[in-house]
Length: 367
Image 1 (cartoon, helix red, strand yellow):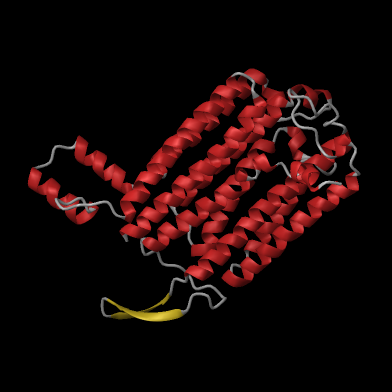
Image 2 (cartoon, helix red, strand yellow):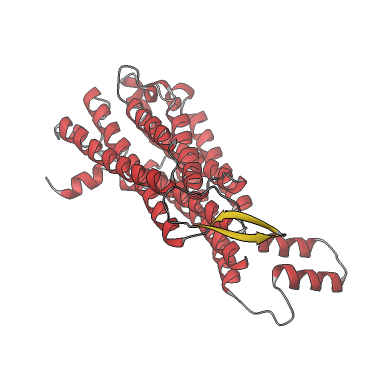
């Protein structure tokens, strides 16, 4: 069997939904580090315990290690993407066995799935197990390196949730709870879990980014379920879209995209941009405005472009791109163009996460 068949079964157009929240968690941790956030020391000696004098006191703190940070970040990415692939295979397996995917293959019904195309269900289940094993292995290594042992329980919960979505006697995906699970396990959990693994903290930026990723994961789930609404209803799969109908479903999907784009504009925008806008809106004395701009924002009479300024510009462009892609996704949803809407929703998530990363880089250069 060709490798392209298994790549298709992994649904690569949805994989940004697994990577984006990890990027948000990495960005929130990096920004917290740049702003001098305090963290508990990890078990693995990647960051060495040091002492420093602070206001006359000797304090213990963890020295920041970029290699340690990069390794943990990559392990978190493997966990998130591996679980995403495992869930995609499990969904293919369960829906194929139940006959829900029998009509897949036409443009209206979406791409044909593995089991529905004749592949042995046991092989699809094995592929899901391999992906889950890779995710678990990376997760265990991350736990050992960081010393956050309770994350094992969180990972086990994710595995159970991935299996129960369409498998078992009472799959919750067949009872209208798929969108809620997508919000939690492809938004809140990977983003906040990554941030906590890296920094031992949860910040407002990380929480906002996790909500954005959750909303965009929900929008992808809604697009899938709107596309399959008739087939799902015929096979007893009572998704949220089946329960509320196509009209309300499209409205909710558009709202999820709109909220995600709006929150990205608010929380991923660099502080320097807000500072410039504030200076434009508030009429301050010239000498006060000039002194504050020079000391706080680096905008002096002899000001020139630096790394932080380029990062601010890149973040602004990324935010604008996020809004533009989300707008196109909204148009596709309204016109029932599901094959176009799904990758647009998924790409919006990745571009939004990129804006958070660029914002964090800008804060790092400013620190």
